[in-house]
Length: 307
Image (tube, rainbow, N blue to C red; front, side, top):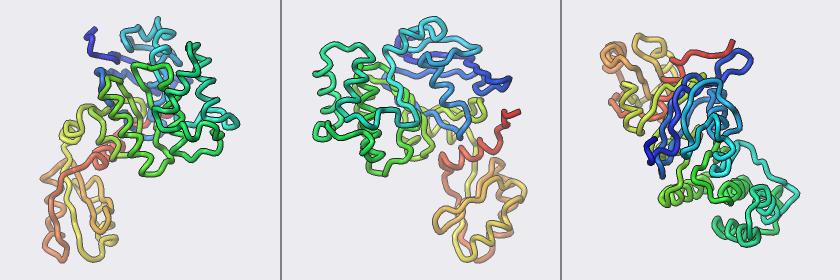
């Protein structure tokens, strides 16, 4: 194995009740990388994370996580991974300090008092140490969950939609902390639905209905999609949108503030369909396609794995 690869897996597959929820996924993540794992609800992201950290056994595939075999050394993997679940999973009737002490006990850490103190200080929670977890806002619950994930000094963080339901400032603070950790060599695999967060990642993978549809840097993912996007402004945009939907080559018509974005993968056919409308009272200009355009396009062309 390349010593720089923290995650190096191929062919990862998982089935439930005869339905394939993760289908032949390969992934390589390097040390210190922030790797974004994107996809709609039910796409298989959480199942994949659980297989990586040893909570689920794959039905197919092989590879390593932190140099340990994902099939035979899951107990070792768990010791070196911090896993932050989608839902807040700490005791709401315990204080922040007591919750961190409990997690330290679970890991059998020596010098628990010093470990807990370090966890509180690292994320600015010392002043709230006696506050009950159930009284925390979403942003502070997120901070507690991250501190708990970090308490045993893992080499890899698996974060499952960690910023869902928190305010913009808390999200920004969280991402600044993630980049600080990555700069120190920690590797992060993070699932998110937010496009601005995806753009903060070093690399991305997009999964839908269990299948990996795209991966690479932001620019690589956008470039490989081959989408052309036109922006139109002017009067009567809702009415115009209805007229444009369904035209040959038009795959997306989406409101963006006071404009419409019209996208498609066949640039020539798209322009041919739009040309009759370009001579009217609206102003048209071609713009760069963004991640949101790409992911909607991927989602609409993916095949549902249900049934």
